[in-house]
Image 1 (cartoon, rainbow, N blue to C red):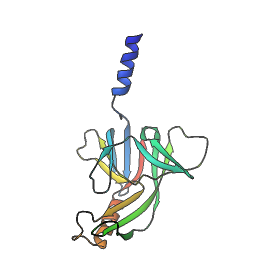
Image 2: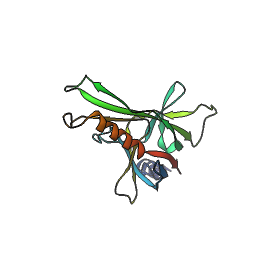
Image 3: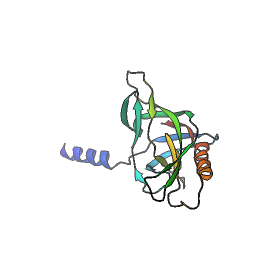
Length: 177
């Protein structure tokens, strides 16, 4: 019995975090499917990536941290206009452009409440799929681009174009299997 318990625990804890399949339908119409190897998150600049198995969300006034494994689908609803501003907390002053998008989550095992669950995770997500060299990367809540590290080289107009490019190349639907 003890040996069985040890084998079970080792198997449960050392199995890959993901073996789930996923299908991305991109806003420009391309469809990408595969088996998830890992998921990372970072800021828009792609630095300081870290592994994740969760996503931030909200239902009404309740904030929640959802396990990606428990999500059935994530669907794009709408997005706002691009907003740009200067952040004087930094020297030199940093330029920032953002665009908020609205994505709704459908859980595999939904609760009895019928309130919609909205994504509130403003990090860039990187989905690594088996057999694919480059990750599928996108924002789900707020696209935020700054001139960090390129203060003298980039204008608001260029930052705004970057935000619009991220939005155009973003995800329309994600289906987990």
